[in-house]
Length: 250
Image (tube, rainbow, N blue to C red):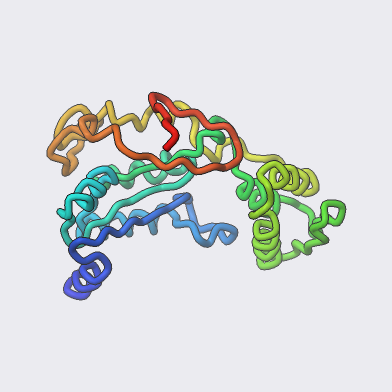
């Protein structure tokens, strides 16, 4: 079994190639309405496997090695998109347990109680007590919600219909869906300021040590890792704020 895992690991990421694993959420338990997301047990198993079979690098270190043609075999990066609260509550303890560096791309507009449009749709359909959702007035018809399968299909349909609308139009229709569902929008799905600050690299002040004095594998303090370089900005159609970043038009 171990030999087979080694063969698969080497085939997935040979020398000179970088594999980037991207996640969004790390759920408390499997959710039939979020089948593309991992739960704690699955994420823990995956990170344990990475720690034992792959060379897991921070994203800046991986880019540096890739640029200099110094990337070894089985090189992998772990990233998490958008900044969900469960990245802090569920993913971070597991990443620490297995000494896995990770990069979280935070959609800053949704910090402190915000909620992304697709999550509003999921929560509205998942939580409503209605058996039929009437969206005729906004051009989205009527959707039967009498079973889990029908609710799954409703979510898929609505997300597909709204995905490519203008951001303002998409948000307006999303809020209409929520009002029609007679449900509340959760205010704890995304990260808050305290959680973001608590993940501050400046707290990792010693080589091979985490802030709680447990061991990690890094030969230098994480606070000394690169803080400058190239970043990508993704337009979600809403204002964003960056701390200590100077933006220059190319």
